Amino acid sequence: MFQGVLQKMLTEWADPIRYYLPMEGDFVLMNQLIGKEITLQFVRFQCMNCGENKPIFRQGYCKECFFEVPQTADWVMHPELSKAHLTSKSAI
Image (cartoon, rainbow, N blue to C red):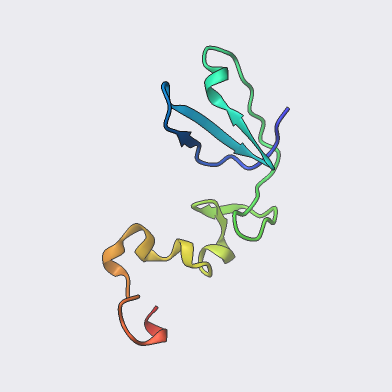
């Protein structure tokens, strides 16, 4: 039995393409499960940044982390909003 935070699968270029589901310290080769019955069970929330058991706000982050970490800034989804090219540190 594997346990961990449900995340986007990783892929490996091969014939056929290999799909891996990352779990805590391990990977599940999903190709081996094609045609088989699997069960997923929700255990708890886990913020992708702080790891706390808090309700998820957006993109896998609790509300507090969502508004603080750079990975969730507007420019991630809308690169045209990025101000990284400006010289001022406060613009970033």
